[in-house]
Image (cartoon, rainbow, N blue to C red; front, side):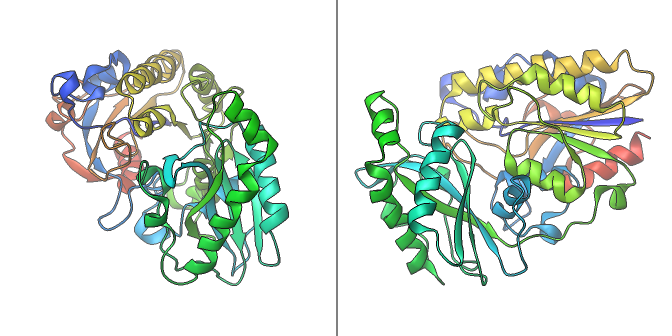
Length: 399
């Protein structure tokens, strides 16, 4: 038996008046996910433990089979692993977004989804001016970068994700608590460095949003993961354009598979991810495919874009994998799910249980679920489960 987990980041949502009181997942045409639900077994999964922030880090860690209550240490350390940054015992990694601030308001958590090449130039300018003994800045992908500090500096500071406070006053959500004064100074000091940077002036002239401030959040030290093979006795590979998901895979001991054209945005290479996953199944027991696009549309507050992203995920990822496994010699079990809701009317994550469905090519007893969405999976046989147990469920039921 081989195993595939297909994650449509942020697909789950809440009913929208503009859609007649249904969700974008109900509205979207998803024949392939509906097939998995109708021919397999379905339910709801709690990916975010009570009391924890509903981030993609916590939620995806659960899906990969690691209980966040036991293993989570912060988002940024996972991204550091993906970027090849080795954290020492007293290092603290922070996510360092490039954001757009307009008249003191957080206008965009992504600087208009700035390109990696442009952002790298800006972050290097910040590091040249603000990097010093004990503080370093590292360019990442698009708006997602890192700052690393020494001596546990900032580990206890209260920081807010910028995508949670779009349209709010910057000063109301600056770092608070221990070490916060110095972190606030770093954010404020980045603004004059970036304001008149030639690259930002060029972006403004082209009608694009500038990356005119850094924003620090999601900090933590290096986590200690047991290898996936030690926990579950299986080899694995992971496919994602997002550093934090790759980082989970690295700590789990998975092979990280990079797909040309995978962007972490609405224009990602959906089909390429599915094709690479099918190839990876030949020499791995577990393959996990993560697609960020629905989540990005949710943060944009764009229902139409989110519906399109879900339909693209269903057709080009789920459909391609379903078609591919039918010609395989071995049986294959597929788990499909989002990691958390990203309601378009809220433009941020929530922690409600999300729909999931598990289908195996040797399934003989499908349940009563007939479609894949927040409502129809309630007819499934699993009820509400803890997401960190799903890998074990796949292995116990479909072996």
